[in-house]
Each structure stands twice: as structure tokens, then as C-alpha cells.
Amino acid sequence: MRKDIADRLIAALRSGEYKQGQGRLCRAIADGSRSFCCLGVLTDLAVKEGVLPDGKWVELDLYALRYGKCAASAYLPSEVQEWSGMQSIAGNLPKAVHVWRDDSGEMLTSLDGFNDAGYTFDQIADIIEKNWEAL
Image (cartoon, rainbow, N blue to C red; front, side, top):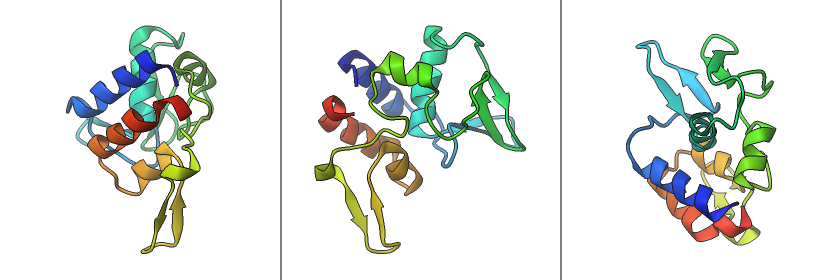
């Protein structure tokens, strides 16, 4: 991942500006607000940067939002992956960072996996800070 983009993502995750959600890049909440997974925050940074041509989040189904014409609602759009220099659409991490969850028997291997397992944005920012070159 590009260092400058990693630094911006780390700052955004720690800023308190984004409400954390799981399972989708972005979700509409009944009160009119939105929640984001860590990859959704990265996508939103790309939106603000003008990387994605459509310029807005659109409803995919009842609560999931996707960006513009991108078919996926849980993984990075290819434009965001390219812009950020991220090597995968899920934020795959090196094996040394993988975590075995005894409670579920699941191996956490990516940023989206850590996010969906309940790691906070601060904890995910720490992971990115230590592993940005491998992302």
C-alpha cells in the first residue's frame, strides 16, 4: 500500500469521523447516518479525492451501499485498490499478522476480517501502521 494513503487511512480511522460497521463498505442506518468498515473508510477517502468518477454512494439493497457502478459492496472497487496501491481487494495481511480466533475457529487474515471480527478502528489503524508495506 502506498505510504501516503496508509497514513491518511490511519488518520481517518482514528479521527472519530466514521462510525464503524461490519460486512459492507458502507451501510445506511435507520436514523439517516452511515457506518463504514475500514475498507469503506478507504473508499470514502478515494471518493473525496475524486478517484471514483460517480462521486456518490448508492443503495444496493435495503441497507448496503455501494460506490457508483461498482458491483461489490464488501470489497474495494478496483479503482480504489489501484489508487491506494493495496495488493488485494480485502486488505490481505502477511501470515505473521494472522490471528486464530479460538472462540470461532476462524483465522483472521485481512483487514476486512479483523473489522468484521470486532476489532476497533484504532486497533485496525495499529495493524495498518505496522504492516502498510505488505498491504
